[in-house]
Length: 418
Ligand SMILES: [Zn+2]
Image (cartoon, rainbow, N blue to C red; front, side, top):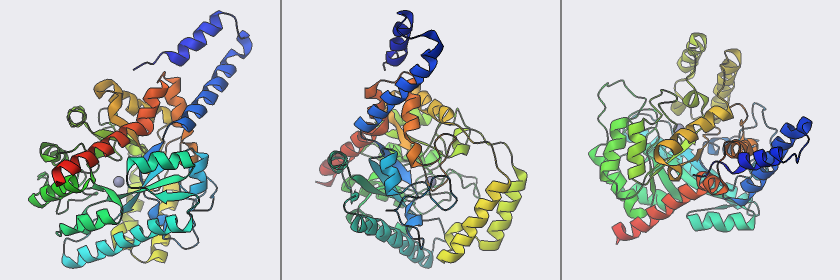
């Protein structure tokens, strides 16, 4: 990794008296911003996780329209702001909250997944001049050249698959290119990192092994974000292709079960996989205890039930409003862009620059100070450049790494599936 380029350039110019000392710092910053913008525009930029499809279902919210950043009902991503923020490709997630593991529960989960899949397809039909559905790395690179956004689909939580393996192929046919095996609770595929109702971590189930093998056969990326530590190692032991963590961060820097330990990061590198650093503030920086907020959130859950139980869109909106009220009333200090890039640095120093990328989790809780929505993504590139990352490193982090893994998964499928 070359991390000297920009700073050495500045030092040489400063010593040669090229700039007047009084205005040098401003000039440095201006030059850096300009160079960052050029690099940001030149490289393929990919975000591997957003929960924006749930907004697509909201009445009156249109992804083709620009929404003012920072407003409560704006969301973090729309197509105009994607262009502003120079984001070329997004993996839109069909997030389904974990519910009961019964035939009725599976049916409801499938219904929700279908609604979200339909919304993503509809976006592409409504705005063909702005965005296209993408199912391969080649699509993303082609669309970048055409100046259109690439919309990939990731399925967050394998719950809609229930116990029916044939559904994996059905979802593949509808464009799904990664499956996050579980969400916040254990499911039939594997145990979750955040479900300790049963303290024993059972890892990947027999059915889960079949799901991973089916993903390998079809060319779907297996996403190990949200899975428990044992599930993670179980997946790595049997998968025939590299895996991704579509939105996770580093446990050594922020001790949270959703984040990856050093041991996991090293194992991920031997699998040739990639971790996409997540922008959820409490995964970036340990949140201070906020008992009043916890109490208010518990009351909200009592009132409405869990998110997965609320299917009426108008009730869901009310719940969202009250949820945001609570966060406004009991705020906590947010992590910064600098602290977020510390996670990228950490992964680079531990396992190298080939195994890290960006997975914002916008519209699913992702937001840090200095990068609250998609239009502010160039601030990440600026910070990388400020720290001396070369254009080649930035290209890898922003998209080349994840597209390389995706290509390997597709190549592997041709062998496994044959
Ligand atoms: Zn998530």
